[in-house]
Length: 453
Image (cartoon, rainbow, N blue to C red; front, side):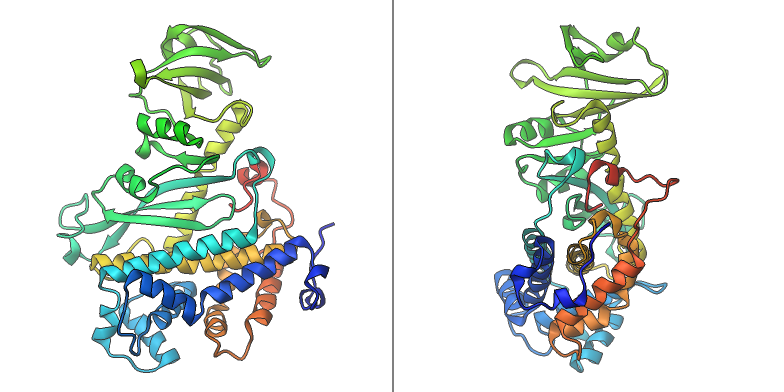
């Protein structure tokens, strides 16, 4: 039986009486409160060289308004400058239309909101102290990267051309952590930009012992070479144009047969290819000094349809079936995109100004991280597995607290931040806690130990 914290234990003055998870929950709450202080935000503003005059619409107030706007979620339409300005006037007083809009239409605004996002993610990750479990316990983290489109008004087609003539749009590449359930960072370009260059801009180097899940849009040999040199791991589908040669085959008894180089088609020609059959091969890719040794795992969906997965992860880290299951975790980011497009209007923008699009999208991501951080805090405080707090249900619950959250963080709400955290945690456990997974909806993240998905 799982143990839940009570209000009495959460209010205990002696921190030593709290469990480790409850202490971590308190630390996450403190980090959130400390991040949204005028001093903390002003330091980010100075580093980004943003809004130096600091009149009525200060960087601190703009951040709170943007977070509140996107946390409340859309109601059939996109958030425009008029809606956010109305929130600003309601909370902080009158501000002129033109100066308010110009605060977002500058490169420094995008730098400021991006720095704020990345700083908050670091703070929450360090405070929560989460670790992967189960089959993924060998990795420090599992991170998924993918791209998505964002429609903008037609007047932006010169700066942000789309694949469709006479239309405009942006391409975003996002990074999502399976360990924490947080949207970590993102990079923007015109919709016609490729995903791989944007990803290289977003992730200039691999992190050691982290597993990266990518789709075919990022497929290139240099990516695997860089991962091996950094001690990281990559898992992605095999592109049909990649000429890899088989040099080894793992048998059912876990022994590996080695042989001279041969093609995949030749090697599998006389093997059992019935539906459900699996293959675990050692392969070479490249020639001469550029030759790279990798692992290739296959799953037969039918006799003539074998799905191949190329990875740098060793057999001691992931078994054959675990490689196949791990790649299916990549769908978590597709669910995240759906969540953000439905609730944060990520799929479209009301402005065509590139700097404003970038700044406000980072603002939406910041709002999303606040929601997911409160989910982490509630799970730790009540000693509930993070996987059992449904993300979409958490979003709907916290949306009702949007005004109270911003009010408490700005210090003008009658409810103090510590008490509000208790109310939010109680509401999440009552509404979003999925104590028993439905048999008809088996969740791969739960089986794999992907605690944040």
